Structures are given as structure tokens and as C-alpha cells.
Length: 134
Image 1 (tube, rainbow, N blue to C red):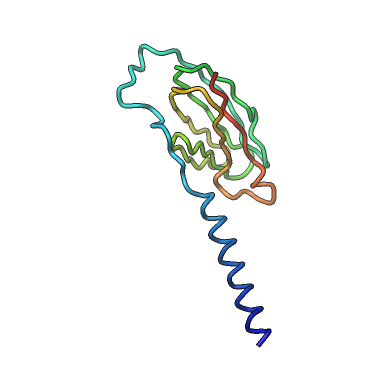
Image 2 (image 1 turned 90 degrees about the vertical axis):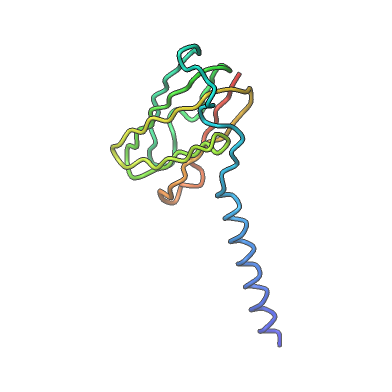
């Protein structure tokens, strides 16, 4: 009888862990990356060069001014990585040696996290950074 309860508890625990893990994989889109009504010719622009390499982004903290059209050029140095900025509905895969151009409009002050969204090895879950719009 105890073995049956143990199996049930382990199955329940495993199911909860899977659900917890999957809930963190969704996109929590709060803004359109580029609002349809945005007049691109009439807003300040900023381009940032970034690398994605073994378990970190460089730079991993971006300071931007509100009202800026931002272009991030992300280059993957070793291996395939991802770039997910969930609040803006952005999730891109970047193959090794490739550079992806990611655009979004910094429309509201705040801190927004980004992370690697393509499993890249043992340090993957710590590969993250933040966008600070001031």
C-alpha cells in the first residue's frame, strides 16, 4: 500500500514540476513590439550591438530612453541561442555565427527582462538580462 502512495506522490510531484516549468515558457506580451500607429520617421532611434555566447549576453543590461525606436543586433558567438523579450512578444532563435536584428519601441518606463529561449547547455537558465526604459 505504501509503495502505491509513493508512486502516486512522485507522479503528482513530477506533474507539478512540468506544469511549473511550462508556465514560465509562455509569452507575457504587454506591448506590440512596433505599434501600428508609430511614425518611424518621427521618433529617436538607437542601435545596440549585442553578443550571445556561452551562458551570457553582452551587454546584459540596456538603458534606453522612453519614446525610442530600438534596434538590437544580436550575434551568436558559439552555439545556437535565443532572445526572448516577452513583454514585447519577441522570441527569436539565433544560429551560431548569425546576427539577428530585433526591433521594438520603448514606449513605457520600466524594467523588462530578456532571456535565452533556446536551450544552450548547463548554464542556459541563468542566461538573461534586462532592458531599463527611463
